[in-house]
Image (cartoon, rainbow, N blue to C red; front, side, top):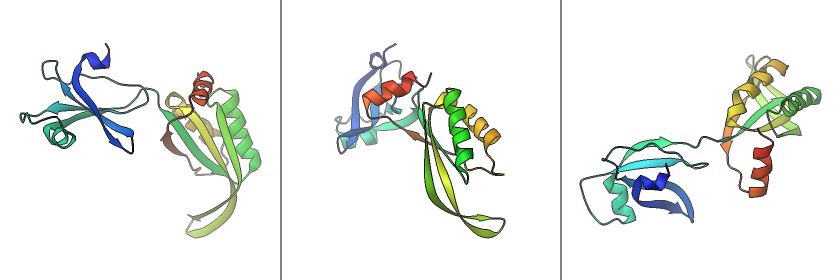
Length: 176
């Protein structure tokens, strides 16, 4: 079913012209209707008893939060680091050759300061930036743990969005 068939009075809260969330009143038996939109979070709200005009301020006050849904296809950036260029290349080459990531970047000469075994360490490392789809995240983490030479490797993940449609098309084509 199409998202808009379930809802009426849909509008977006905006900051600097960028939609942040979608607020909507429900029309199907006053029950929440579960839906997702690709590449953007959806927040569903239920209309309160107060029937004031549908202005931005009154709408925020007259809706109560029900649930947040996130997109099914989410892009991830996994970050790791190592003190060896060879180890960084083994990780990158394995992920690319097994089609787990369409793009891995290795950045050299990263100065890292951290505490290890109660001592402050200062080392030169290679930063590994791995871009992938959410569906490949667990397998990539497993490969990093298998291939990494550190006892406790850094593995950090964050979400990102692709703004260039041509790059997005290339990325999606090479991520499956």
